[in-house]
Length: 265
Ligand SMILES: NC(=O)C1=CN([C@@H]2O[C@H](COP(=O)(O)OP(=O)(O)OC[C@H]3O[C@@H](n4cnc5c(N)ncnc54)[C@H](O)[C@@H]3O)[C@@H](O)[C@H]2O)C=CC1
Ligand SMILES: O=C(O)[C@@H]1CCC=N1
Image (cartoon, rainbow, N blue to C red; front, side, top):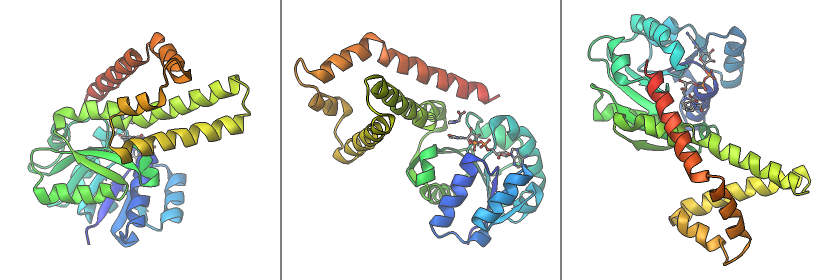
């Protein structure tokens, strides 16, 4: 079996490990390096995997997944490079950082795959986009697809699209959570009990997402189905347009794309 070392057991690293274990990976084939001692102990208790220092977990790993903040990556890469097995595959989940930068910190020829995941991976409903650097084989890409399929849907994209992908799907769940939060607050403002507003908003977001996914219908057509002539939805949509919703999204995603480029260093 392939052995995997996850460097960084925070939100995304722990999500990946939990998904792998749920999907039949043996706990003996998975290890985590986590620098916060208290959290390292929690991870060990929760998942029953080895939690150790970078040198210990990297040495015996076929795959090393880098799941630390982009700002922590240079230091981590230095340590990983010193202990990486010659045939190991490196997978980076860090926003912005290019495979070229990562390759430059590792032995020449090391296969590197860049991945942009998202947090619905916590419930197996993630979306991950993967891009090879200069050296991965088809088998390497299939291995990364298998790894990320443990936490959701996987697509391949050219690395040149990764900053835009980060703006759409990497950061995307936050926009949807903000919409849900805003609907709840508005419902409370209109006089609904908070629990009722929350139940209605959460189920509406879930139902709309399921309908969009399962019907395969364009969202504009689904929106038209809700919008009666001179009705309530038309009134609401007009207010959203008056407040510049579309241009706000365009500006937001451009800002996310630009920040991803900056994180490249
Ligand atoms: N949270 C999200 O929605 C997404 C995060 N990402 C990327 O995933 C990466 C991790 O993000 P999060 O999990 O949210 O961050 P996090 O802060 O929750 O986790 C990072 C973990 O790395 C650990 N760490 C830092 N330096 C270390 C070292 N030298 N040795 C061992 N452990 C070390 C930290 O203690 C922390 O637990 C980032 O690069 C981020 O860009 C990508 C897509 C979505
Ligand atoms: O906010 C961030 O930088 C990370 C990358 C995409 C989602 N969270």
